Length: 383
Image (cartoon, helix red, strand yellow):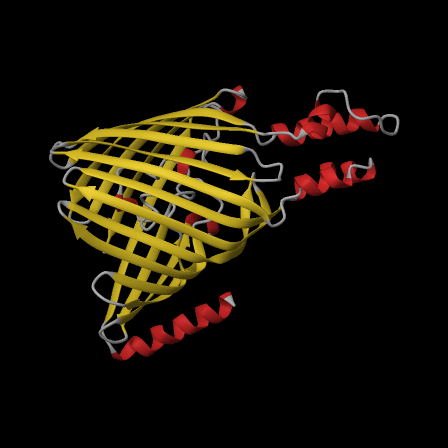
């Protein structure tokens, strides 16, 4: 189904060649280096220009007065600059307020979701990873967009319905990731200097993560088939809740986003994350500071709690100790409690070109080895 949608959209894109074609692009050239033996966001103590660098082209065309087609191709440094089609969708303007799109497009989970790869659109090198580091950004399906004014307020809302099926990197391991019956709804309200945003998402989640298998297999062998099935992430209900605000008055601004995610009946922990960002504008110069917090804690059901506490239900000799250690190791691998502080600046060097420098310090409260200091610098431009 997904391939059929993409083929249909691309067909419309080709047919729009007789109409006006618009070609836009953007690029991020980013370098970074950590202190001593630290590693953070893919960087280490050897300077690298790979992880956050990319080059992209977006092509759009009008099919008629109401219909248009859009495609976006991105070549990322971390993928050896192999070009990939990441967006391909057709849009139809129902009227002045409503628009429907079908194909592959960005999921509207965050404030900067639509421009996540466009470094020029924000002041950071990359948006705060505590919030924005998710396993997926795009989906296949349809999107209904609505915009209107009421008094001094401007409202924008989006409803997306579709699915997602892809390989994702999780802990450096390629993992099968599926979201079925994937639905998101977001609304944003803006008045003068204040913007408020809220989003809700739901999906039946399947997560085939190979490091889970030893624990699940051991539980089955020990007679805990029901428990193993409960912990398996297969078509389990997943929920995403987010909220954000933006205060922008004259030359100063404060913004923030908060997210909460949970996957029921699985080993996945509930996760909360947020950031607060503030800065000033002095002509072309924009310094800023950002604080981030990320925390998750696995909720073990009663049987896994007994195993992990060393007082399991009696089973074969020796297996209880193995299960205890395996359960603790697997569950603790998901534990997270860290704060991140960043300070940096953006300098608008010329038209559509920005130069940035950002220092980031991460404090991992559970594992000191994950503490890190990172310096990144880069140039972003659009055309």
